[in-house]
Amino acid sequence: MIVDDLKDLLHDRLTSRARTDAETGCLIYPMPTLYVRSAQAPLPVAKIAAWIYRGIPLVGATRIVTVRSTCKPCCFNPDHLIILAAAKASKVVKRKLTGQTATEIKLEGRTMSVTAVADLHEITWRAVVRILNGETWGDL
Ligand SMILES: [Zn+2]
Image 1: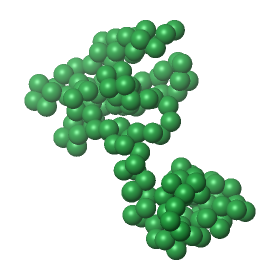
Image 2 (image 1 turned 90 degrees about the vertical axis):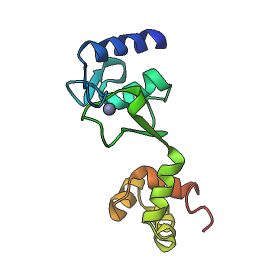
Image 3 (image 1 turned 180 degrees about the vertical axis):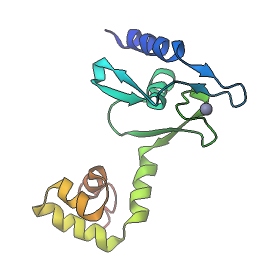
Image 4 (image 1 turned 180 degrees about the horizontal axis):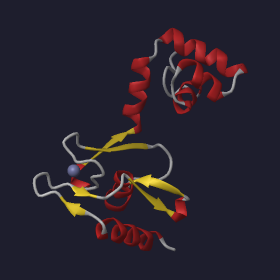
């Protein structure tokens, strides 16, 4: 199936079961996720909408997709989507950690698995990878 066909199919699936909230303009799907066979997983409707209508990649955590805080749950109105760049996510990680912790993580990363280091510091494994790759705290 080519990409545009899949986008059409998902658009039809979303809109066929959606209702519009007259007050907020939210397009509301009955559930927060939609099962996508080609992804073999249920995906958040906001993330699907970001892909269909804005071309934001579905796979990989390159972008964080959410909806306005005033939105009804399960809203997928493309005008209500908030798409944060991964760079901002890195800044969030950097703010939570101190330089000393980042140095510890770099040392631990030599002997421990990424997931073990992540669990130890209660951060995501992606944050650990970014630190080990020097994408955040690269100046240490
Ligand atoms: Zn909305």
